Length: 330
Image (cartoon, rainbow, N blue to C red; front, top):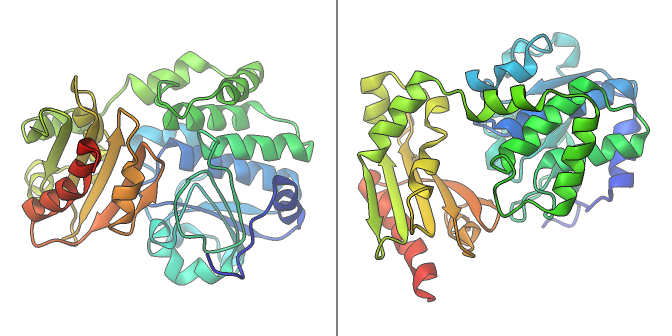
């Protein structure tokens, strides 16, 4: 950690948020429900505190999450930022390292004055309020709203509940704590439609996503006596079946849900010739340490990285060689 980047308490983070200034709320590439929900809820808090706020990301919000931002903002791409906000300060959410900001870091990195995050591993690039015990970044944003005295609106609560449910797998993952349920209860008390949110997040999938899962299952391999599941998805499949990156987000679930699997990896090719790796552990294995070997990070049981390799088989071998020793106790 660089000396100039300070850890901030929630009270200190709120002091920064209270400074009235045009603000861009940035979040990570390939945005998930926690990134989107936390960013837009934080933007609402900033507006309530007197600052103009606009959410921004290197990638557009996936279609399956557009229900969260309908009527709030048409696009999050840098090209959509109003001219009056071009020089605004930047606050990031749910983004543990510069690499996760993608191209935004090259243009906005030096203007990030605060990062709000819950990942246990990463590379701080600004003063930061990081709480690894939070199941989702949404918990931190919710605490900031409560600390500020701003009324938690139904819109805020919907965004935060979706974020919380998304990062906990509908409250099924090991990151769920009693505090997580208490946060969810407060959001439900705000009058949100839990059933509708859950249906849109977990029970409704695009046809292309189901197709990607089918194609991914056909390439699934079980190694280490069935304890390690590795799914490879070459970029050529995306070209052949007209699949976008947002259709591939559930490939890791295909690998993780096989009975007996303790570590799962989904490796998918990208248009620029690199490989994005998602890692999950069903047991108590530190897959973040595997991701860290390739410049990535995340949580102990859920992490990711982007790596360069000659081809997807080489990428697979790199991941297997790094993950298998965990299962062997080496």
